[in-house]
Image 1: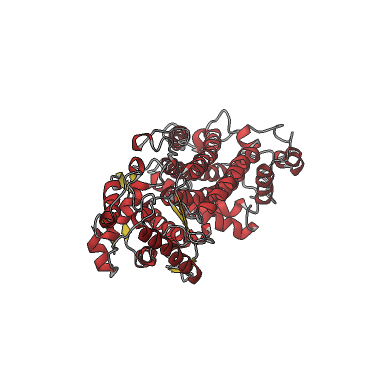
Image 2 (image 1 turned 90 degrees about the vertical axis):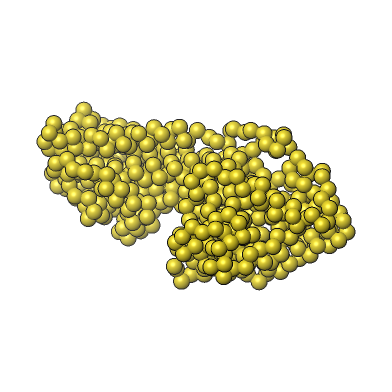
Length: 511
């Protein structure tokens, strides 16, 4: 656990704060001004209930039943029934970090003061985060329209003594997990069940984690593209700043600048006409291709960071005026489009990496290196089949990268007649990122092998640490060996940011 404490106020949660809580178990506390907003919002709900004013989901039914009035003595049961009815998830459970993100984002949204819940609701969410009660939430079942109703219902079940939760390393009945953690069960009052399950924290949590990992990959891809360029004695003229300034595309300008910094001092790189006039696109167009993904990820980050601090409940309680409006902030379309963009941007980093791998292993394309990067081919297959693995996952990525947000299927008897599929898009993006981590890890090993098979020269200022790091963990392949563990090691060093930290210690932060 980190020593850092994250303060929630509903408005200032950063991606870095989010990850500190979800991955480093940073403790959470609530800002005083946020608590005041919650109290004022709840006071509006209580007053309007006393007046008997119809309010969606508070004293009416849900979805198609929005016009059904609920008697006062059944309002509390309405909230419990909502949770039970919506907890119909399918598939494997989300990983712990995603669940922690969901708890965090639901609490942060409530603290904006639009949800009309009592302080005990967000206090329970924060307590679960701080002591480590993690509801078991199936990954599938949300269409991302009225928010993430289904998975969020599974989040709430342990809070009312039902469902399942992981605590202290064991999966327990929800009530037992809460009791062992010393957290009182929540007695849902009017509006509170709806406040807990109407919103986008599931798709946002999945997408935020995938985004962070993709941002690490984005810079790591520049590092490994540079290392491969050296291993193939690439033509450095393609990275000249004047080329990229002429096009004006920010992403490729940044990527080209990264390549020049990484390759500074390299004697592996050549000049135009020295060995050949130009390289294949997978080397020559690294700035253009990586740069396009870079710009796409900037857009995704802007959407995610806004959603981390968004009010996505329905209806919204406006404490300043006493109004309660039923709108559509729960609809996941902004996140859905961003998640699909994230998947496409990451997939392209994998596509070009696989093409560089294929070039490295092909004797017709690798400029004199041994076939499949092994000295005694025939008896040894060398890196032949790692390229197969890379090809397999990038081809799978092409299927996964098909946008989910362009699909829609009506629910609730046509009341919810357009849905976002945002949670599906976020889950697909997360899988794509994991695949690209594996592909870039294979490229890293291939590039190091290619360097070891030729005359030693001077590596660049930023590529030298990359080469040294992989050789600390993965040895040169003289003869075939069981290789999947090495591949996992390389992917892990990428995913955990070890490669990026080592390189940036030598050249400074990459953009």
